[in-house]
Length: 181
Image (cartoon, rainbow, N blue to C red; front, side, top):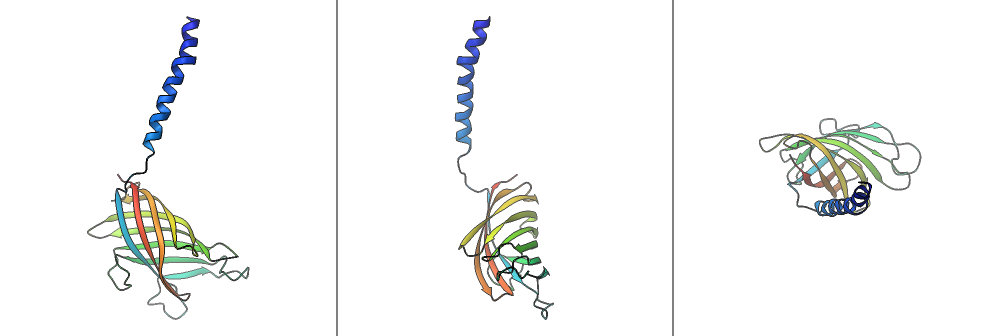
């Protein structure tokens, strides 16, 4: 009996382990996204005089540590459109915050929820990530959602489409969801 147990542990169990590992390798192949959405994020920062048009405001001022707005926190409720025109009808709202997090260059960290309430989509997508502004494209993580996007996971690739000084910028967001339920 002891010999049978030793044969099982030394010869047969490694066979099962190698089969499970080889099948696990096949399950991690990159796949096509189950949903793909392209949206434009429009941010108009309140400059002290444009309360009617502003969609974001600085909740804290930048510190005096460097020339890159380090420590400035901005809270926003920005329109999301299907094209790059600010006055196009919004298909969602982006609600959240970003803060400038480096003293030596412009970078920010974003955390926000896209809120959809249209005939095409209902629900939310939760997105967060580092915006390394000097790079042409950046990837944010899609970390969850509700409604049509229940438990969604994926990537939002961000590209700065336009900016006008410190008070307006537009981001193109190419959202690819890889887990859809």
